[in-house]
Image (cartoon, one colour):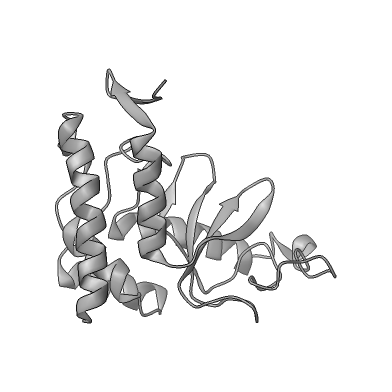
Length: 189
């Protein structure tokens, strides 16, 4: 694993962990995944996760429900489950009527057309069908590993971050703009 990626992931996680400690909720972050847990995700989803995602999972295997700005940072098991739901909907034809979503002249060429594709891996979830997604199969103007947003009503959009480290940086900014009251995130005034 490259030293630069390791340093970037370690640095942003240290700052995120400090925020959780300062707000007395470090228990919101789950213990590390094992290398076997990560290998199981890759095998089950037939993907190779970017180094930054693997390093992150080795630090924290997700968060408790409601313990992340977007709802929950998904654990290895939850990544497989959430991604599986979307893949099942794609496979059973649920998205056939929106297969050309984002394919028109004004479409974002960073993403492949469609409502979902098998190269997307769920990273976080709000419990309502929305969340950040790792894009391992981008459109012609996209980058492998970019992070996109999936809204179950509005469809996919993005990229929201150029890579997983950028995603973590964005979540840190969200954390810094809020506080915790009675175990719930509240925007700081």
